[in-house]
Length: 493
Ligand SMILES: [Zn+2]
Image (cartoon, rainbow, N blue to C red):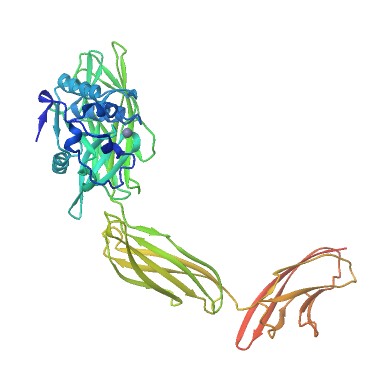
């Protein structure tokens, strides 16, 4: 059911209770609420709802709406107390003035039409939700046969909404804004600069994709117009223009904008432009907008597994989650790891909306290779975005026993005297470990106290000054041999 602006009539009012759904949390699922017959007969209830929500979305969406109708407008704040009715009338007047077409449809129909539009600058429908928020439908992306709508809500960015969020009755009005001229006019007093659209929607993009769009400008006036060098707010947006360009009457100018999509789920980039009429001096700021969506991939948490320091023979465990998203459903096919000391358990849980969460409990059992170890886990999935999930692992194996401290500070010692400091075995339950000096400076010796079983390092300096040395020790128990270094420092008087 289509309604042209000329045949527009106020729609039946909707109850207060239905106004709960705010589009702030666009991705949130809304329960189905439909206006009831009984409320339709109480128009007075609706007065408050007729005010536009004051989050600023109306101002921004009206710029989109006007651009889609064929006219570039400056950004201006829409006062909070403006009624939806007055905004609607303004838009209807704008459509009439620029020869654009404003058509009221059901949101379902708008989604269907948006899905059929394939070019980058093609579609815009203004959506008004029950709480008076203004949103924009820019396109539809199909993921595994399901439709996801690209929806803006003022400055809140671009969201991908599943079909059920679009059709659950939260949008009370949908207006398709269409431009019959094929160009957008940027008015400069009497003069006009035309461009073949100010919006480029790349639809679904891959992460880190290199994209580019061209904007064709034409000077449709009798005066020369200067197009100033574009200003961007991100280094990933590069305009082909490196200075101002002067367009003589009738002249064309092609502006190319290159953009890197990044890795976030959606990107919106504004290119700030300015032009001025060389004869009247009238100028105008306007912006070009480029955006696209990347489908939300599975959540991988964490991206690497650090097991910390594990004593030989002991274990350390960490958990990894792979979580489905609506746009990335998958099964886990197999798992492998290049470190034979790693074992794992896998469980699958269902949560919110029958999405799956895979929990992996990884346990590392430290072997005899002391020091830092690294490896990689590979999980094969049926995900289109992450068919192979690679998780680096890292851990450090400590010998089963060692001497502490690793640094001995003798502080002040006088030449001719000796000073002894204890070194203790850790953990303490290894009391029958044999400690042998392997290599040490002549000033150092090691002894075991026969009563307590404690080892002492004795320092006998023979010259004054700051002294530093290293002792290499062998720790032996049964078939285990651990090499250890202890550093010594002293201030010899
Ligand atoms: Zn809003």
